Amino acid sequence: MYIEEESLTGSNRKMANINLEDVSVEIPVYNSQGRSLKKTIMGIATGGKIGLTESGKTVVKSLSNINLKIRDNERVSLLGHNGAGKSTLLRVLGGVYTPSSGNAEIHGKVGSLIDISLGIDSEATGLENIFLRGALLGISRKKIEQELENIIDFSELGDFINMPVRTYSTGMHMRLAFAVSTMITPDILLMDEWLSVGDQGFQNKAEKKLSELVNRSNILVIATHSRELVERCCSRAVWLEHGNIIMDGPSLEVCNKYFG
Image (cartoon, rainbow, N blue to C red; front, side, top):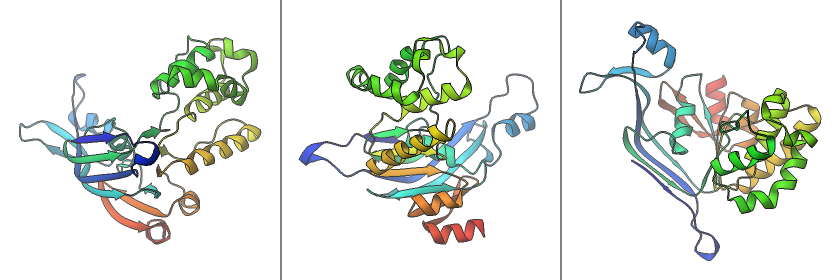
């Protein structure tokens, strides 16, 4: 079961928190193209456990009985090799995946920077995509209109803002996506690695904007492979392997065990 509750503002505001109890995520394996079962499974999962449901269906268990509590003001990193379950866990927290079993209670408004290009239409103009991406993020049209000039200035697209995104370079596309996506003001911020886009000049101001967003958030949960990032930004680390929590504790202690 997944429950998300937006935090209240003003004097009645509740503290953000996350509570996962025995959360498992099972992804069914469908083989509709005549491929062997082995190849099908290898194509969708490198770290989950392969098993059968009671009805005999093949599934990849991406998370297994996860118990995790994250409190207000915590900065938590997720460590683990590819396929360990980090991204699946982020998607559970973001409401993208519903647990196959167990309970996920999320108290606070969740904002995700996992895929900042999601919802960008290559045939639409940059200006149109600001409203499209903003709507997907749950941002009101009124707020987008209020921030429109700042978004355009930050993206450094100039007259290209009125051109179809298909005419953009990769760097221009990412600058637009970053400028829109960082409009969010979440209680709980989810990230898959620290975002770094554009040339050095843009990276410097993007780093500042991202740091401000992190500081405004009550909770940060970030999946990463970077020890430096964990020790710089997070007070706590959770080490995942094959969908299980191996270690959960202070960043330095977990990093010493994980990185060696």
